[in-house]
Length: 244
Ligand code: GEK
Image 1 (cartoon, rainbow, N blue to C red):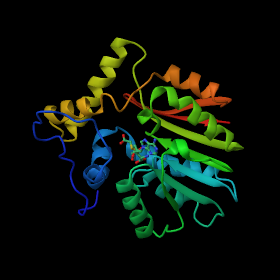
Image 2 (cartoon, helix red, strand yellow):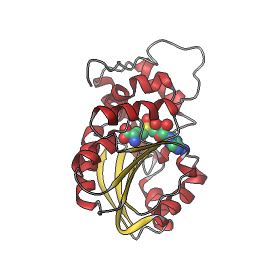
Image 3 (cartoon, protein in one colour):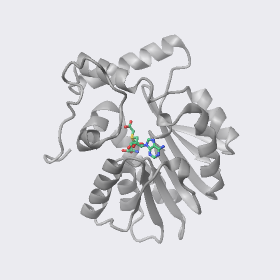
Image 4 (cartoon, rainbow, N blue to C red):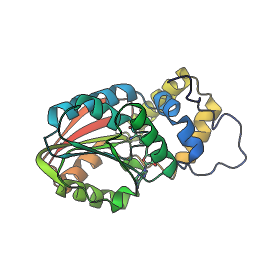
């Protein structure tokens, strides 16, 4: 985090009523700090998305960062595929996030990234060698996830990859309890108070809907992905690679 980025204190004060979480200007302003201190392994995942893009980006193809927030995954891919003839497309439905992402791309000499403010359900994916959904699918209504994955699959090259990172639910109540406890311990170690953890949890309750690894695997297969590998897990945060 650079000194110009603000610390996330959005849930530090007790609130009488917790509104559902939205990706507005206040969240965009502290997002970098928030995600690094909240998602175990986030820095590793972002770094590895760059490595995966380096390996799988196909000349003259498109690479997508869907639900890009501040564009961390697109930046990582951009660094690794510099000089190759590929188009990077970063999409988010939050105008505040998209504006900040575009500023980031300009700062990092990546003004060539196409930045789109749109719901990813309204996007047509085409000629894609790499598609990244880094902690984005979890915010879609559960019954709309399969059709999005089908449309992503339809727009991918045979040799491409989908990187799907998600917060997951444990496979049973006990596993879930253990994983959630470890995640909260991680947040406490990163300076979040119990009040911040519980108020953020309440805000996300109806917005971020985690599912089990088995459910993700089944849905990816139903969407047409012939092979799905889990390449990262830390507590209740995972990432898959899907092959069309
Ligand atoms: C990162 N990938 O730093 N269409 C477009 N964007 C959406 C939609 C939608 N239907 N729903 C949610 N978003 C990023 C982190 S954050 C994850 C992703 C988190 C966007 C939303 O506006 C937000 O910016 C992002 O998905 C989720 O690698 O905050 O846990």
